[in-house]
Image (cartoon, rainbow, N blue to C red):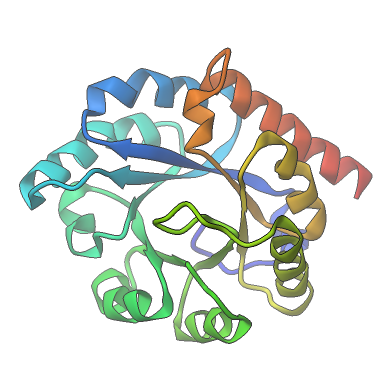
Length: 218
């Protein structure tokens, strides 16, 4: 996930899985393992609940092998300062300022991705600064997100102009295929995946099938 490449060069789009806020690793481990076993997943963004630093490190370590043994990168949501001690592969930062603050902590050994990019200018700034990917369309802390049409426009613009990978956030299973068709290198799914009936594995399998359909018809 760390190598800048266009979708044409890197193959069909891949899934990027986002967890709910995790306060009890044991409570999510089985569902996470099932999701990872259902389809190809490039990365898992682990969203740790607020806690002291040692607890967060221990929670990340408790899930690291579940993710990494499946060949997926383990990214922490923020928390760049504990990435190395937690055994994670990198971090996802929200906003250009947070990305800039974390860059020297993560680079060159680990992945540094960035979302929360309100403008095209912000996306270009973090790309030039060394981001491994940019993300568009994810909700903010108040669960607000741009209109989906605007997200598609941003993804399509990025895919046409830039080689750096782009992650498009899908707020539902119905958004997966349009994001892939617009040119996203990765499509982020979750945390709604974990509440899906009949389970996260089925949701991931369906999302993967929709990616394949977008690739076949693109």
